[in-house]
Length: 254
Ligand code: GLN
Image (cartoon, rainbow, N blue to C red; front, side, top):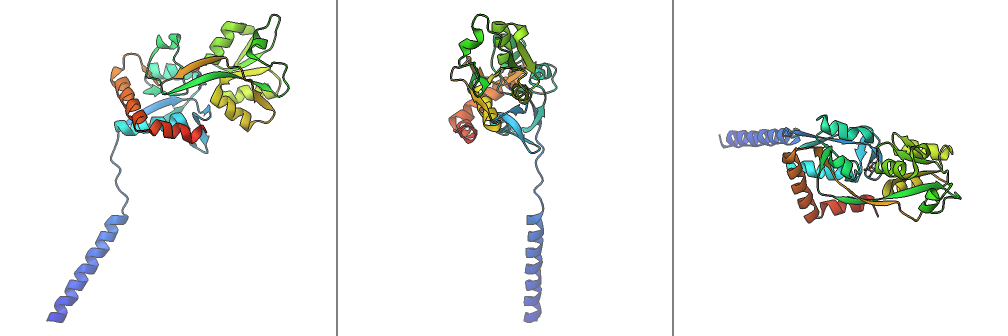
């Protein structure tokens, strides 16, 4: 009798261990989170770019941290930079984040969060270019052609300063650099960190020492969407305080 009992006990124990193992290997059912859609242009390394199929970079990671902090799942939608504000206004995406500079004109169309990073407009030239400083571009009689990304601050400033005839706007940074290498244009005006990445990835190019403009990057939301804007600002404060944003930036900018 004792033997039977201990046998039964052993069997029960074995069964429960087996059951426990089944439950522990079963995938955890992920709790359904609401989705937060971000519009960006993923040709802007190190802020947003493709690593295989995945969009990574400073903005992609900060956005994921913000979404996580607020209890959302982040979805990134890649589009031309020039379409982001339209997509935000039309509600196709909840917010835009693309190394986007706060400008007076954009403030008429969307609302911006507090700034999470700063940028500088730089000038990329081929090695040995006669353009040595920003002033060479503006010199009397200068005819140098400038490439920019459509709808960016580089586009806005260059068109203002040099006139539309001397400026060609490309859909993204890669297209502008290809045109520069083809000698269709004499320089590219673009944000400094993407400029560094482009020069690193493309031989025979260099960045001029003189900068063109200093700016602040922020996240944009549909005008009047204070509910989301307040949440994003709260997340930026918290993620700045706990060092998350600094760690993410440090991962991409040495
Ligand atoms: N900072 C620039 C702007 O806001 C460029 C941004 C970008 O090309 N992604 O216009």
